[in-house]
Length: 317
Image 1 (tube, one colour):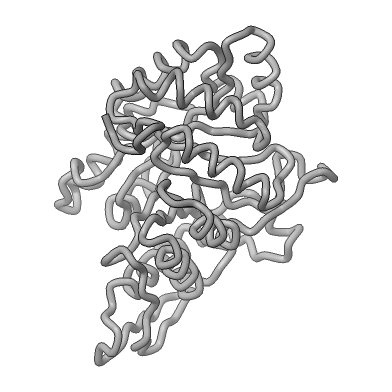
Image 2 (cartoon, rainbow, N blue to C red):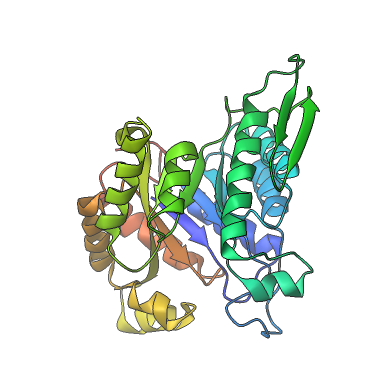
């Protein structure tokens, strides 16, 4: 059980830290954040952008137990060699608690607003493929290796790197890849991912099956990879609390797929996802100031989810 923060109006670091610490106290296994520089409404003057990996570096030092990561980092934001170094640095700062969720990037207006290139879909997939080869290749390279790590692709080139980034986790932090696409996304995930995330909407069971078949095609045991899901949530013990929290959810699409209701309703939805094949669930949170909802889920939902962390110990049941 994990918390995924995607603040409706952005956030200050103090807000992000408070939510991460509440997540840790409540007994969740991990705290993740989105990697966005604009919100759903690109003209929202209240939106406060923050850099994903800068804030995760702060959380690496200011939290003690929860795993930390991105869901998902846009491969268009940072060159892969630099991203490999950033993630490795934060992993070392956290004592080995970092995970990298990475995708092609999808929000064109966001790229325009910050002067970031946004090529066509096919090229973004090509660039992501090369980025994953570089990131994993650098992490797996031993310092001082002769020759060093090199890569010559259509979009990126690495020349004889003998001083690669050194994450605490070896050969590198877990990688999460996900989405709804039936071809390139599951194929990339089969080659590189520790965990496949089925995203929102559509037939989650079928997406897992497509990913499993992609693993089998390359001779990988599908059981070696995790299968995760995202679940927007508005949980409360009164109808007023539920309605207030539901109104904060970012869009009608998200509300359609959200768990909106009592702790028992949320527990039942999590059980449904587990029945489909999800072993990890990210509860999608939009109101970064609503720490009471995190505490409520920790007290009333986590104890009824097999394998979820217990608040008082942080260990699994």
